Image (cartoon, rainbow, N blue to C red):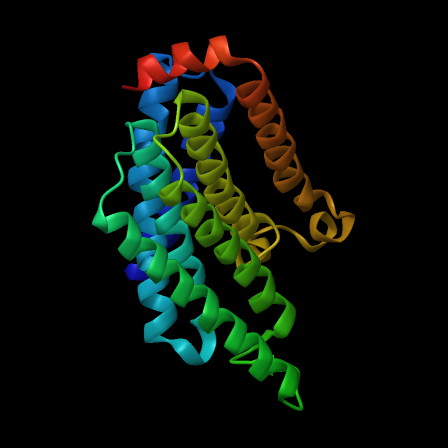
Length: 225
């Protein structure tokens, strides 16, 4: 049942995120889709984390990915809501730092093992997730030490964290474990990587617009608040 909930909530998260990305930012449809994405992504992330650590022998990396995805959506949501910095933010940074350290350790163990794997996953998978987790932690350090962030910084933080969580969910479905649900001929074409590329391109476009064109950002920030 937990696995089924993980799959269904992950699929709903992808659909909601697609709608949120495709609609004007700050509008009612975008906000509603964002709320669905938040709940669905948290559900799939937390169930994935639980499954990963419970069945570490086969799903360990899913546990680390679930922690990262949950952290991204919570901090991304807080940024859109104003993101007043509290002690919980410092605790979160410590948590994501620990997640990064454990991923690096798992990757190093895989490198040293004769199979090149640790609990069934190669070192590069652990290092890739460690890079994403470390990026989030480093960005938190900058966020917490700087003066009160303006609307552009808050919306940019919201965008890249939500889109990165979206990227992780899409990767899990299209090029990760979920790829087994697609016919072999489709998998062989390499087309399943396209959704992830589209998400990264959309994220780059959103960040460029946010950081270099201030007026739309102010309006989006006002709607989000």
